Every structure is written in C-alpha cells, then in structure tokens.
Length: 111
Image 1 (tube, helix red, strand yellow):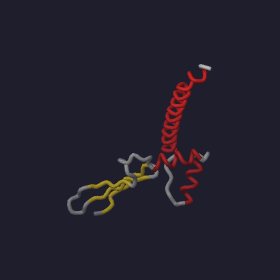
Image 2 (tube, helix red, strand yellow):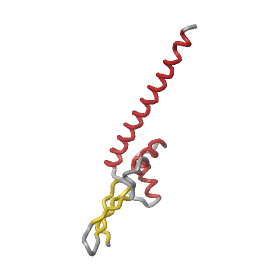
Image 3 (cartoon, rainbow, N blue to C red):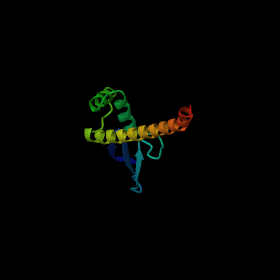
Image 4 (cartoon, rainbow, N blue to C red):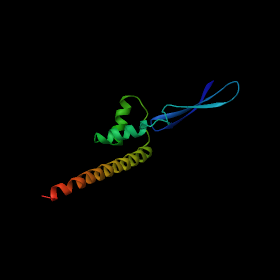
C-alpha cells in the first residue's frame, strides 16, 4: 500500500492510499467527520476570533508550529459559519432570557 495523494481541507487532510495488489483506493481523514464535536477548522477560526485575532494571527500562530494554514478564502467561509452559529446561539439565549423574565412579570406587576 502506498500513499497516492493528499487533499487538504483547511487544517485537516484526506489522504488517499492505493493497494499495490488489488489497486483499491482508501481514504483516511485526519479529522473525524462523523463526530458531533466542532471540527478543527471551525475550532481554529472560533478560537482566534474569540481572542480578537483574524486570519493574519491564525497564520502567524500556525507558522510558529510549522502547520500549513488554510487559505484566506477558506478562512472567510469558516468565519462566516462561525459568525452565523454565534448569532443563532445568542438569539436562542436572548429568547430564553425573555421567556424567563416574562414568567416572573405577573409577580412583580401584581403589587
């Protein structure tokens, strides 16, 4: 079995191996795509944004660790997804707070 090719997908890769006897091709990913946890790309972008950084800071940190960085276009797509998820979570939390406050409202206005 030998490595045929690698396809980078941000910070993780799909590595393709080819069997020398049967010519079957197998793909092994460096990130678990079936996991319910946040993937490495979303985690990296979310982490760098929460620290107040952006693409340049992520690029700098990864360079210090000798890890190839994702492209700026890919970073922008991940940033958009992270922002959308943060907005959705914020809306859910605000709605829950309003509902909780509304449940207490009759008690305060009855006095």
